[in-house]
Length: 149
Image 1: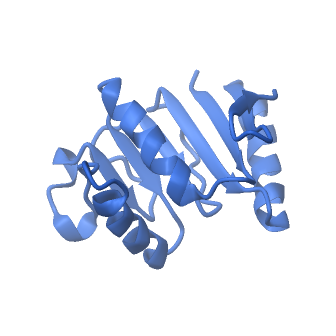
Image 2: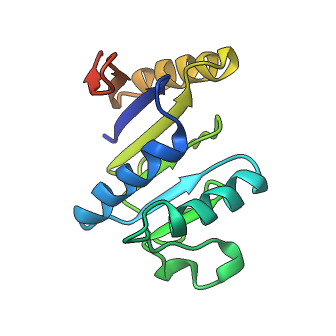
């Protein structure tokens, strides 16, 4: 079964958390897909991954770049897996029906937005009901990620 992780973003923004998680994924030798629901978010993430750090960048691409299978990190609005990713990140309330091709699926949701919290709860229940190994992560007051469930 796929490991399904939920990151409850309350103290840190997606833009601060996602690059670090992607770096850790690439360090493991994994390929990643990041799925959002709007083209605007894809464009913003595309820009972010080139500029989030003054000394490095995350190699990635979108459908506009072509050669989808060659990108270690692929940004998309659809549930495709063109780069044979091991891990899928779901942002902006995105969802994927079939998790079977992934070692890990990670939901990153805005804990300050009631709709996002509600969608995350539904996805959490669904992942449990489908037999996945599910964990829930929340930041402590000091900013450290703590496993809550």
